[in-house]
Image (cartoon, rainbow, N blue to C red; front, side):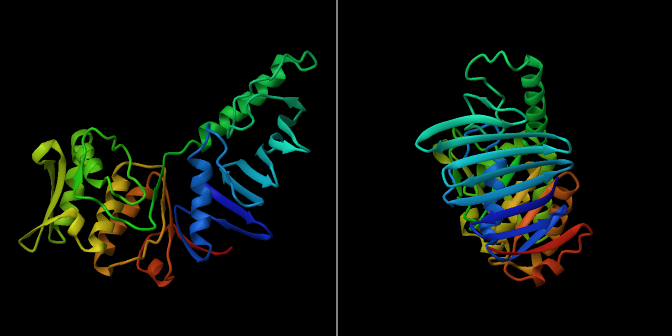
Length: 311
C-alpha cells in the first residue's frame, strides 16, 4: 500500500499521507492521480514522457521511497531504503546523451531510460567488483517487487459498450469502462462466485444483469430494469458507473484509481459502492477524486481520509 506521496510541478508542491481509502479534493486532482498511474504502470518499462520542465514525484511504500525527477532534459530516479540508496540519471547534458548510475558509485550503463532498470553495464569496468553491481541490482529488484502493483485506473468518464469482440483481450478494464462486457464475461468464466455476487448485489437494486453471446459471435450485455430490457450502454449514468466500479474491484487490483468519481453520483447506490470499497481495501487500496467533499461522508468506512491538493 502507498503510504505517502509528494508531487512537484514547477514551483508548486504538495504532499499527503494515503490510507486504504483516500479521497482527493482541491485543484489538480486529476494530475495527482495520473502522476501516480504514470509511475506505477511503467515499472520495468521506458520512462514515460513528462511534459513539465520541472517535475518530481516521490512514492513511499513501507520503508521504500522511489522518486522520479525531471529537471530540463535530465531524468533522475532515486531508490532509497534507509541507508541503502541508488540514483540513476538519463537524458541529455550539454548536447551529449547520459545514461548512468551516480550513486552509490558512478558508472555508465545501457538502460537508464528504464524505470527501475536491472543494471546492464555499458562496458566492463574492473574498478568495481561484481558484488557491488549485484548489490545495486538486488536493491532495485526489491523495489521492483514492492512497486509492481496491479493498478486499475478509471475515469474521468465512464461509457461501457453493449457489445464486445471476444477475440480482444479483456483482462482489465479500460479507463472508460468500454470493455465492461468483456471483463464481466471473463469474470463469469474464471471467477463465477465473484460474478454471481456482483449480479446479486445489483439485483437487490432492481437491476438484473446478463452477459452472453449474441448474433455474429459477439458478446453482449443486457439488463432488465423495472421489467424493461435495456442494453448496458443505455443504463442511467449512475448505474453504469457503479457497475464498472464493482467489476473493477472484482478483478482484484492492488490499487484502484478513480477520477471524477462523483460525476452523476447517486446516493441510492452508496450501499453497493461501500460494499465493494470495503472489499477492495481488505486487500488493496483506493484513491478517489471527488468534487464535493460531502460525498466522502456518505461512505461509513473506517480507514479513509481526505487529502486536499493545490497544483
